[in-house]
Image (cartoon, rainbow, N blue to C red; front, side):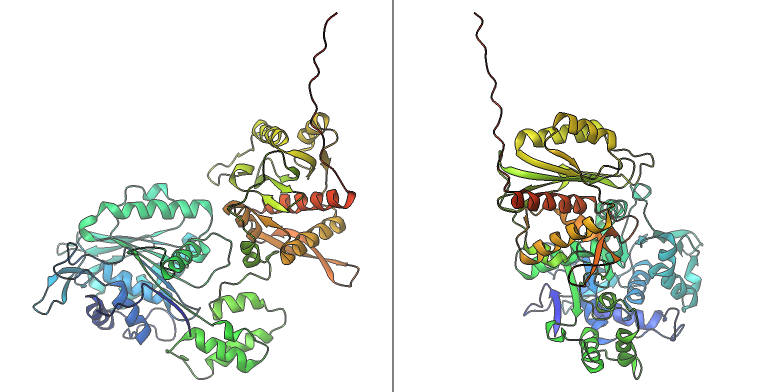
Length: 544
């Protein structure tokens, strides 16, 4: 059974408000929109177990007695297991004026006694305002309006207010999309991130950082964050991917006294073969866990989606088997790419290298990648990358800064060739070529056939492990962002050729393109038997 639960259960269980929370949810909540809409809430064993862990507190006698054990909780379950409903129910308890959501001391048996949160402030974040209303916030709004305690709240599309005895505002929930600055200064007591595998853009991650920093302002209310998600696409650097990496580090013992509880379940490697209906049903069953089918034939119905013509099987595997899976639209195998990282290595000064250059001046990004001809080690990353700030509409790359970086590379290394895509940099590359006539070469990526063969060579280099890289996160992100665009052209073996393109509008991959050009130049250098150029020495003439 493939599960990741960290921290592991201790021999001596921690005190927890979980039993009280379970009772409160099943007594005061209802199901959200769907087949069970409006019926009394019921928690399966796995959700109860998650609540028990999420609401663990330090025991009596401890210096932090009664305080929450975890500042963050991460749930990563497959699609269709009511994660969003779970998040809404937890949020309901964090808002409710009678819910036992915080510890108010211990009884004679050492069990924690619950109390409501005082004046709660709860932001709920999703990728857009529309999705906020459709996801956890929308479910919470329904639960508030249709449950037995509707008179305790005033709900709307932009906030849900907890009403006091005189009808005054005693706390609220607000939906959040992508505006970190507007949340600066918020006195947060709890916050929810629904489907954080979709939150990967810089402004979204900035919002997340701002919101997380706000948790320290209400220390008396013991604030925390909940993340409910399905597995995402590796390499997007999403908030969920960061959580998953941290959970894996906790599992490896690399983090002492972890501040996060994380629970993931997925179909393990023994379910790699998905060629038959029965094999897929077994994989879906494992990814689901002990809760089983919600209705007769549910697993078979899901499994038959693989047989649909044109189905994106990578997507199906990711959402129904909860596996971190490369999208069929992604150009490169990111898992393989990560195994080629050599963070302890660098290209030495004076090395014989090639450079790739690609990008746009007024949108997206611009990047260099350097390749050591002898070893195949590539260097990319932040120092060789300029990306558009999403908050700046009239963004433009600083041409002088890019030229200065090229001159730095030319001085630092022995450069055989720079292959650069010229459309957005025609005049600039012209000036580079005038200064470095034997080294700067225009290489048009719009030429479908040559470009597709260059991409194939890069892919083969990754697959064979002859390309390595220094492990720069930004370069890896661009590799993961690169999409595959199939052509109606076959190679010499009758296989379809393809080039690079965007998976989504906001996912930049220019450094991946620069990496392809740098590798192409490296292969050309090897093929031609290129030798390092001798550095010119200055000659001092004597005056007679």
